Image (cartoon, rainbow, N blue to C red; front, side, top):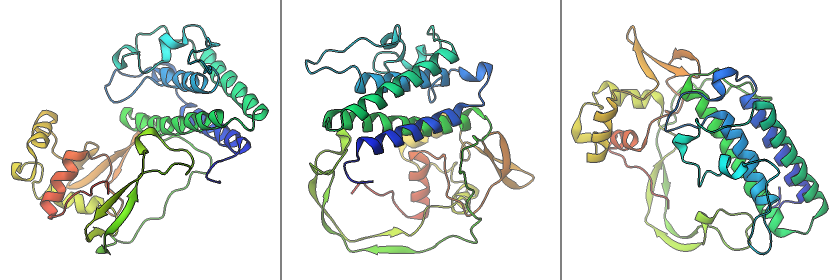
Length: 300
């Protein structure tokens, strides 16, 4: 895809993102569409309606005067505007039925597609259609981690592949000479998010970085060395989190018969030693680095 995709390319990508959204939620039933009230997930029924609202808000309702056209869906702003609808209230909203929500998703995408087809030179529409695309892609990640959090089955995605089992960790560091570079997006470089603006010169000293991600085996060594019980390895804020969470290992790990097991969606499987460790937070990663005499990288 070029830096500035054509409207036809964006239409194809929007359709692909929607297929993934529907595939990630296709098997949910009954109460799974709301799920428990947790601070780290949304009710899936609200979330798919929010996708339709966001796409409509930016691609169909904007006017040159700064006012908004009315939504095609009754009370859409009161239901789905995430800037106004507090997270913990989303389970109590009078949400439409699943068929009504799917109709809203379908109708908005059809109208956006038609507008893109009819306005090939509209740069503002092109930008906001990409914004809606990446927004939906990010919610695709959210649907995946919601399923993991709630212990739902692994989603069945078209073309899904399982990576082969690695034989061992990729050890050692890469030597980075450092120097001056431009960090951030430059004007005219295509779509950028607001927090990527603008490019500025940054000087980085020479450094070394691990050639590969920290593996489960490397992190398990930290856990086995009582890493979660040694206060000196943790920052003050990290230790306060660990105590409040009563964490003794990564959240989805459990030891059974002397072997570490890991919950992956709705299944508990033996920990795969050479896969990258996931589902650890900043505090856990920071403590591991202190134990391993490393440090977390900066943005630069």
